[in-house]
Image (cartoon, rainbow over all chains, first blue to last red; front, side, top):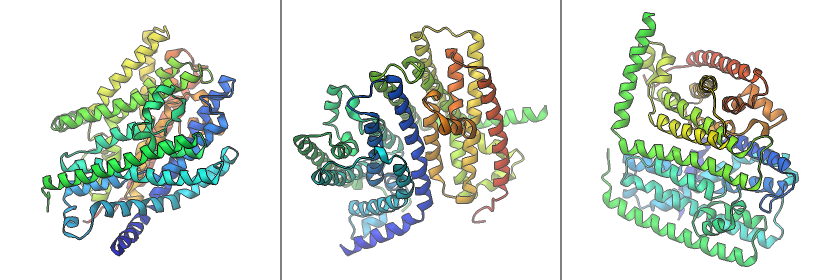
Length: 267
Length: 266
């Protein structure tokens, strides 16, 4: 176990090099967020009545603020590209020789990466949220907040296992970025980045709930906002756990298959 | 005159190279076209969802916004076809010191850096954007005159010039920071604004994205020309003027940045 602490430590040091990059990234992403908030404000104003799919304007804004927070905490930014690159260029060979579990190793790096990202992003995002503080809500009960934290942990795991599995496709394909982008596109809409999923027609939203996508972002946010009953939270957490376990299994399986195919290019 | 012919010949050779390169990775080429197509569809679906709940965003109705998104996608794709990859590769050229070879060649370095590769997928996706625009115009019962279409295309050129100039300026930051993957990502965020209807914004935000970073002009003005929504010809003048300002700034920034170049590992 101690060696993985070293991995986290090294990961933190490596990521710290990119702190300016992170700062830019976090700040730049506030621009479209601001645009989205203004866009919704105009929509509510042109509409006259104050309700879109159960959201007031203030509710809508707090939705997007929370999306930004959960995204900063759990999103995979660079890890999948790095893993795919390691495979393509053969640098992954060194890990096959070491007594180290590659999945866990990458997970430690992912954790370190998120830690630094959050530490950096907290400045611009904090200022931004302070500016919109009237729309920022706190969870209704401590219990709700607990479920929210639990589901965020699951979201982080699910995010990581999905990206990891996608990146391992590099064992078979020369170019995995297209596939990563396709999954990201689905995640962007079906995960709730673009708009809250419950403004969709109900039947459609209900189907989405069985796909892994809402559990990559939307689900923890809707727990936090108190949109779900206790039963719905329990069912959601169950589905989220099942998807997480599924992708963990898939990641292990893909690795064991890929490693047989691996030809150590350039090694 | 000779000079123009020489550059045309060079550019033709660059085109041939790009076609050969793209065609040697056919599967990948098709996948990238699909990815862009998917994103385009997703943007349209966002509009579809919004208009489930409202019938206008300020003065913009559904099909007008669809036309706007089509125009924005068209401009972005043509920009991508000619410039985007080249701009994003600049940081790699600097990091590896390959820029040395370009500086040594007897052609304008900016020309070579900006137009080295052509991304053919951009043209395929540009045509899907045209198809969406035509469909939206049908829904709106608008038949644009020849003059309008010509004006639209000319304004699109101005828009592309703005995108290109700003992107080159941003990429030139890699003369200072070297690792600049964040830059492309940052620019994608700005693209997001170009496809939103201008009247959804007011005050400082709108002024900033009109006069400082003219994202709200790039596709809004051409789209409004087709929709006959332009409040005054001044908007056209503004777009063209801003595109020239951006271009001049980018030339200035480029020359300034190039002076910082110290090469690498040589």
